[in-house]
Image (cartoon, rainbow, N blue to C red; front, side, top):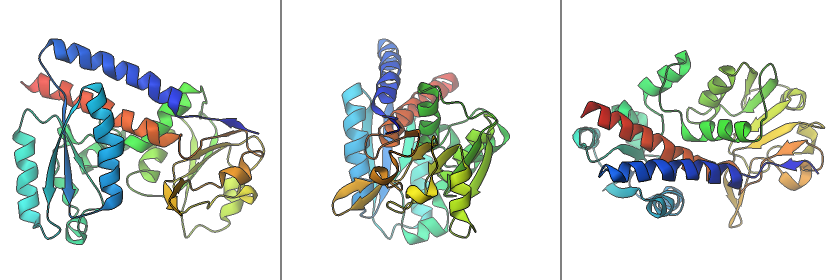
Length: 284
């Protein structure tokens, strides 16, 4: 069996660093504060907000407030609300639960979020800075992958890395982060020809396609590092994009789902929030 790259020890290391910073802020009378913005009803997004974020943040001393909108909220009203949150110095970071309503997604309403409070790194400004290598908020899941690779001392420099998935929140920004570490990156997607040939070639394979058990044993090779970012619910159970049971004995290293990247992602969100606190304090 390949080495299981558990997310828990990575998360524990980050959590320790986060708690230390929060204690420092408390001595200054500062309580980090995150505002979660939701439009309409979305069970999966709500579960993430309650279970993964609110519960963890409350446990470590981060305040969480909510701002909910009806499904038919107008772009103007949504934009106005974001502007008010931008001006509110007591709100350090803003997390917009997606997907938004069809209209707000079409209008790319997240672009009205303040870059200084964009703790998910999804605004055009933060993504642009990431592209050119400037300091910015990194999207949480891609940065979680980097944190895991660093923890287990897996270098990607000079290696052939294949990322399956090209989303704006995961696949594309992760590819940039890997490029910045001197990896040779290939991005694959639904239109890629000879996909199995490319995935088998990779020294590091990242699955971020959003399809349960998409990566099987015929798509991997001996000794490969496999990072599974997928979070799919099948018959009430959370499974990844990789068929874990099918490939675990073939590859060299593999992340589990659950218990892999997901638990680290929430800690990265907290780290980004603390960076937002620093920005806020620097301005005031």
